[in-house]
Length: 348
Image (cartoon, rainbow, N blue to C red; front, side, top):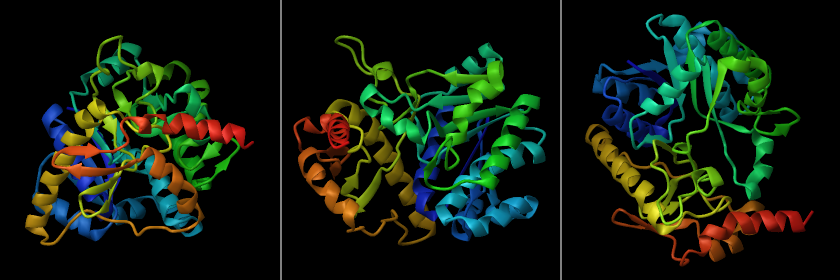
């Protein structure tokens, strides 16, 4: 039995439930532990009374970890959420001896296939900790200032090395976990860069191109299709920054900074994900009438106006028609990441 954990509030409730539904299909014996960040989420998930969906309110973790609660006063809300990343799985491993290995998942992940290759690789390497690199293509390597590795999926064994790694990560995040880049650190993520040297053979950097496939690496050499073939079969995709802008028909792809996916791959990934989101929206609305996707208010500051010409040229905001997402740029969007990188170098 595989144990997983994640956390989310009502703003990420639909992606979080879609993640759970994908796990239930592709890992039927899975247990997902959810740290509910608000009462609405905790109450609704508990009402579902699903035995393999375990719900813990944030207040329970804060009572058990007073140092975490103390950190809450010296950082912004999003920075406090970053601080939860090591504290939540550490508490679970400490409190639940039945968990021999715990895999943390960002709430905006979604499984397209069984996770067996992830754990088979971990077993073969006899690793205590598993991480994945961002795998940026060459023209996006400047983003490594935010960390070479991505926090989206991490796995920890209940052994000395796994627990020591979580203890150390927690201590560092409690001391400093801010949404800015400083030498050797960025939020919860920058600390992972030191793990290969610190953990040695206890760490596995998983190189499977279908695991933590994401907007920033779908066009990398590792994920490139063979000549005349298709992209590798995805196991778990990271739908970062994908959110509705207007109703449920106009969406931010989250891909403008990296390169907008071509039509075939986009429909292969985002079409089924939309169906999953729509299905869980119907489920939640049956219990909470009127519940819908969360929409963030538009920010019309300097960053918006700076990016507007690029959005007009390359797209990146998608029109949804049925289960299909249209960029309406005839493939030009694919070059947005390369173009932005070129402009960045030219303006130095």
